[in-house]
Image: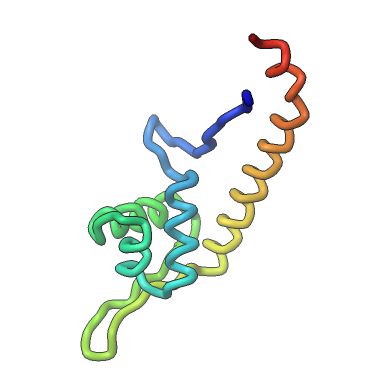
Length: 112
């Protein structure tokens, strides 16, 4: 069966700023309360996850994630209200784009 496939992300000066991967990382941070555990869930290094969070926070008007330093009481990570809002809006955008493409199924049906 033929189907539309698409990826949507935000770029600034050719650099990816936000997209499905960072959104998924934020979802794992929200669920796990830990950047390290979120990185493990996504099978990426802690350093890469940390770099993504740093980039997300730099490109946002408000932080998306707050990181708490470790130590004897442990660290942690939390997605901010702004971060939750960004995730919700991005997921809504993706759902709306998918809906638009599904309405164009007749175009795919004209292809061999």
